Length: 196
Length: 167
Image (cartoon, rainbow over all chains, first blue to last red; front, side, top):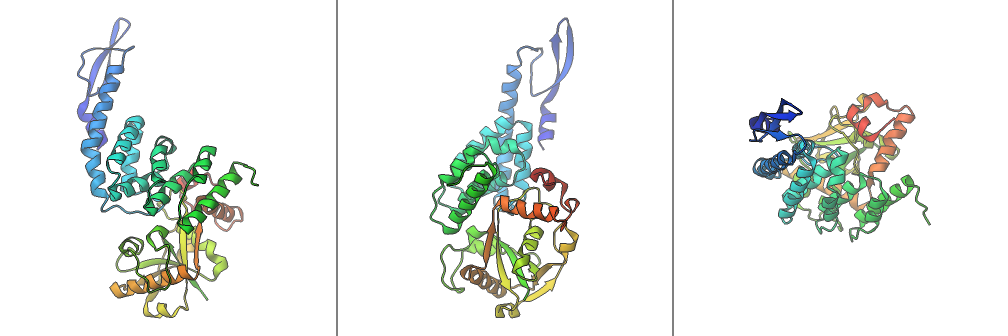
């Protein structure tokens, strides 16, 4: 779908390099001539177009999937594949959009579950890195399922930072406390942290 | 006595309970016990020491691209409640061929029979017939099985091997 969109807004524009002009494929740019040393106009235009696409096309898709997608821990569902595609196209815009989409749906548990599942299931490390603030926000939920997703997303990356995060999680749910304790143990073992 | 193993989403079951008659959330039934053609999937093991075989089977589906923490309950096949249900062998959804035949389906499920499975799961939770494994523990189980030659790395999906850096 994103390919169709990009194709629909793509065009060849002449770019001047020295004395010569070369046709370069660009997306959605209505300019006649682009200075190779100043491509900020292209970037801004592409980003805003991509963000508009995410809002107008991807958001409704995700909203409809919230009712029907399959949620198997560790397995990608339709939403995971859709989000991964968007991050592959432009990870910073996708991340900014996802953060906004997440925050505007804070009280919509179906959408939050959908995002949580996708962030847990993705195998793209770049998504883990960029969406860490979303995972941290999930840890403060009262909904134990979202909190568990937050733990599992943090559990994916064994880092000192994540170890400290795990140690700071507060929950009264016994089985989840036990689980977090064992993940902390795994992290300490892997990071060679002294245990007293 | 053989044991049936079922993966559960622990969050959807009560945190405190006293008997198998306790009520559970609708999500526990409609999500965690989601049926296909009126059947639910289980893995059968000979005894508790074989539990890791079931864990390996559960995390080696063809769509599995990464490991994740896992929660399972164990149900003894001599549990009287099981006599009201139909347990049949069926090929499991694992890429490890020798494990495929350890799969069982509980078939011909109805509204009342799903209620029996709910009781079996609550009973397992009450009696501590419940285990969970962190992502790291799951990886260790699979890696140990590869190292000991119990399973071959080529039995696993290439994407899973790549993501988890199995060797």
